[in-house]
Length: 626
Ligand code: COA
Ligand code: AMP
Image (cartoon, rainbow, N blue to C red; front, side, top):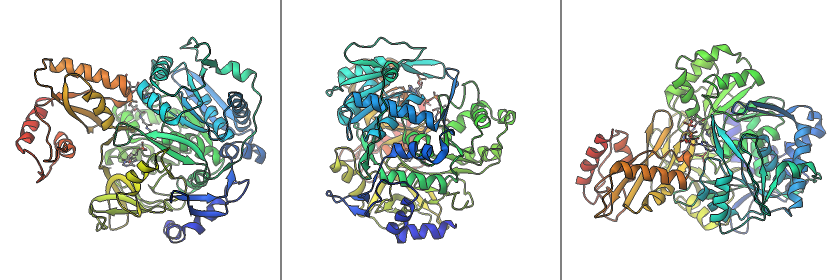
C-alpha cells in the first residue's frame, strides 16, 4: 500500500480511517462513537468501546494458539541471568500478580506506582494493573527520592511496587534507600509496598509496610481481567515539563491499543511472531510502548535487556543480542550508537555476529546527527530510520512508515508524517512557514488515537501547555522545518527541556535545586552540545553578595545537590560562576543566546536585551572554562 494515499485518507477521513484500524483489535464491545468531545471539550477516541489491554496482550494470544511462543526474552548481562517466558507463562504470572494486587484492595481506577529495574516482574506488575483496570505509573530508576515523592503525591497510589535494586553496568543501585526517603518526603502514603528481592542486594523489609513479592506470589490466586472503557486511563507517565513539576501524561486504553497495533505493522513493518527489540528502559515512553504494549498487542516476541550498549561486556553487546534472539527490528537512541562507535570506531565487533535476521534499525529519543546515521547504515547494511515522537504522543508522529512503503532515507530528516498526524510548521504568529524555513512544529487537531487525552488531574495545564499556544493545533515544543519534498527536519526543543543521552529532563527542575543553594543569588541551567550524549546540562550561577566560596567547592556542592535531588541521570557536572546573567529588560533570562554561545553558534542580539555588555563578559567566562 502506498504511503501517500494511506496518509491522505487518514487526514481527510480520520474517523473512517481509525474505525477501520480499530477492527484489528478484539473488543468486548466495539466503540459507538469513533471520535467525540468529552465533557471538558477534549477530543476522545472510541466512545462506548470496551476492552482490556492486558487481555489483548496475553489472553487473546493464548486463546489464538500463541501460548507457547516466547513473549519476553529477558537478557541481563549485568547479573548473568537469561529467561525466556512464553505467552502462557506470562499470562499465568500476570493473573496471579493481579490476584496479589486485588488482595491489597486495588481496583479499577486505583493508581499503583512502580519503581523497578529492567526485570520481567516490572512487566508483570504493569500488565497486572492493566488486567484490573488499575492505572500504573512507572518511575525511571535513575531519578532521586524527591522526584519519586513528587510523583507519589501527584498520582496518590494505593500501592508502591519496588525492588532491592538494579545494576548499572557493574554498580549496584540500591532502590530501598531511595524509596524510604521518598516515602518520608511524600505527603501521600500508599497503603503498602511490595518489594522484589534481588540476590545481589537483599533488603530488610519494613514491618507493616513492606511485603515480599515472592511470598505473595506463592499464595496468590489468579484474578480475572476487568472490562474497561476505551477512554479509561491505562497509565500515567510523568515527563519533564518547563517547570520543576513534571507533567502526568495520561494514556487511555482504546486509542493506545489501536494506535500501537497499527504502528507495529505499518511503521515498523513487523508481523505477529517477529522479534522486536526496543533497547530502552521501561521507565520511558519507548519502554511502555515498544518494549511492552506494542510488541505484545501484536503477538511479537519482545526483548527485555538489562544491560547497556557498551561495557556489558563490550561494544558488541547489541549485535550479540540480535544474533542470539534473531531480532528483526531494533529500536534505540542515537546516543547508544554513538557510545558503541566511540568504543569500537571500526565496528569490528559487529562482524563476530550473524545479523541476517535484522531488517531495520529505528532511532529516536533525541536528534540523530548525520554521522551517526551514516555510520550505522554502513555498519549494518540495513535501512536506518530516524523517527520522532514524545511521551505525549505515545507513538511516532514522524517516521518512514516502512510497513506501508520504505521511502528514500534523507539523512538529517525524520521523514514524513505518520498517518493521522497533520504536521505543520508555523511562525510565532501562527502562519504556515514556507518550505525549508524553520518554525514551530505543531499537529493540527484532532490528534490521532494513542496520544495523551489530558494531563493527570490538571486539564488547565494540559490546555495551557499544548492547546492554547496555537488554537486548533497541538504544540509540540520542538522547532523544525519541512522541505520541498515534504520531509520534516526537527531542529530541537524551543523550550527549557533538554535531552541527555536520550533522557528527557527539565532544566527548570535543575534550576530550582541550584537556586536553593545558600550561596546562589540566581542561576540558569542550559543544555549544551555533547558529542556522546547529544546534550548535557551546564549551570551558570551568580553568587549572593558577600559570599566567599571557592568556585571548585561550589561546583562540587551543586553537582552533589542536583544528583541528590533530581538524580544521577541528569548528568549535571558543570557549574560556572558568572557576574551577571543576560536578561531582557523585563527580566527574562536569555537562555537561547547562552545556549548558542556555549555551542559556538551564531546568535542575533535581541533588541530587548537589558545590557549588551553582559554578553562579552559571559563569552570570556565560557572561553576560560573550555
Ligand atoms: N537507575 C539508576 N541509575 C541510573 C539508571 C537507572 N535506571 N540509568 C542511568 N543511571 C545513572 C547511571 O548509573 C549514571 O550514573 P553515574 O553518574 O553515577 O555513573 C547516570 O545515571 C547517567 O547515566 P547514563 O545517561 O545512562 O550514562 P552512561 O554514561 O552510564 O551511559 C549510554 C551512556 C549512552 C550507554 C546510556 O545512556 C544509554 O544506553 N542510553 C540509551 C538511552 C535510551 O535508551 N533512551 C530511551 C529513548 S529510546
Ligand atoms: P520524550 O518525551 O522523552 O520521548 O522526549 C521527546 C523529545 O525528544 C521531543 O520533543 C524531541 O525534542 C526529542 N526527540 C525525540 N525523538 C527525536 C528525533 N528523532 N529527532 C529529534 N528530536 C527527537
